[in-house]
Length: 377
View 1: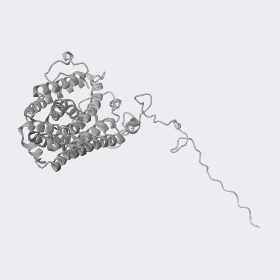
View 2: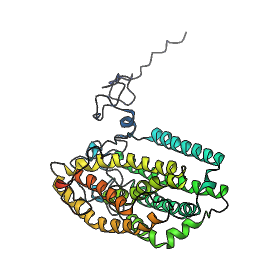
View 3: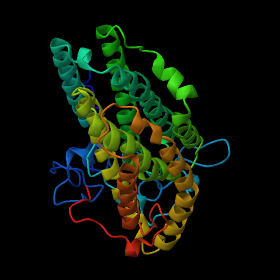
View 4: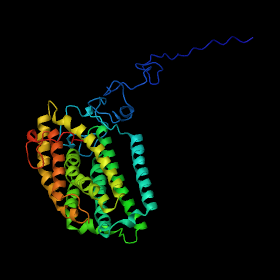
C-alpha cells in the first residue's frame, strides 16, 4: 500500500483594498466624480465629461508632464499666451458644451435652415427678388462665407489645442465648429439659389472676396487674424473686436435690417443662425476674460495686455468696417444709414470693453461710457 501523499500548501492572496480593481475603495459608493469641485451643488454632465480630461501637473500629474515638445516645453505650456491666471481651471463654459450638445445644437440649426429653404423653394421666393438684391446676395452675402471659413479653420481650429486646460480648448473647438458650419450654411444657400434662379451667378462671391475694394479690409483683417499665435490674442481680437465691429455690423445691422424690405424673407433666417452662434460664443468668451481682468494677482497685468491688443486691432478692424460703407447703397430699399449702423456697432463694442475695463472704439474712458438700459445682451 503506497504512502499517503502529503498535502501541499500555496500562498494565499491577501486583499488590502490598495490594489487596482478593489471592490471597495474611498468613494466607491459615490455616483459622481470627486477629483474636482463642481461649480454648483451637484456636478453637471458637462463637467463630468470635460473637466480634467487633460490632467495637469498643478493638479494630478505629480511626476510632471509625461510628454513634451522638441524645444523642451511639456504638455500645455502656459506661456502660449501673454495672459496670466492664478488658476486656469476655474473656467467653466456657461453654454456647457460637450460632444452631445455640439451635435444636437448644430443639427437643430441645420434642420431649421433646410426647412426654411424648402419653404422658399415651394413658394418660389427667389423669383421675387429685385435684380439689385439678387446681385447683393450672390456677391456680398456669398463673400461673407469666406470670412467665416477663414476664422473657423485658420483661427479657432488653429488654436483650439493651445490653451492650458481642456475646458478652454473645448470651448475654442466649439467656436470653430460654429464658424465652419455657418460658412457651410452660406455655401449651401448659394448653391440652392443658383439651382432655383437662372439669373443668379453662384461664383460671383469669389471675385467679390478677392477683388472688390469693399471687402479687402475685411479680407486683410481675417488674414492677419490667422497669423496670430497667442491663443488669447486670437480669441480677444476675433470675438471681442472683429465680431461686434464687423461681424454684427454686416450680419445684423445691414442684412437682417434691409432684406425683408427688398422682398427677401429667407436670407435673414440663414444669417440669424450665425448671429445665434455668436451670442453663444460671446457668452463663453466673456466668462473667460472677465475673471482674468479681476484676478487679484494678475488682473492689472491682464488689463494692460488686453489694452495693448485693443490698441493694435481696433484701428485695423474699424478701417475694415468703414470700407464696407458702399454696401449700404447697393440695395434698392435703404432703411438704415451706414453711420447709424456703425454707431450701434461701436456702442456694442464699448459695452464689451467696459466690462473688461478697456476704452471704447473712440478711445473714451469706460467709466464714462453710457449704456442704454436693456441694450446689453
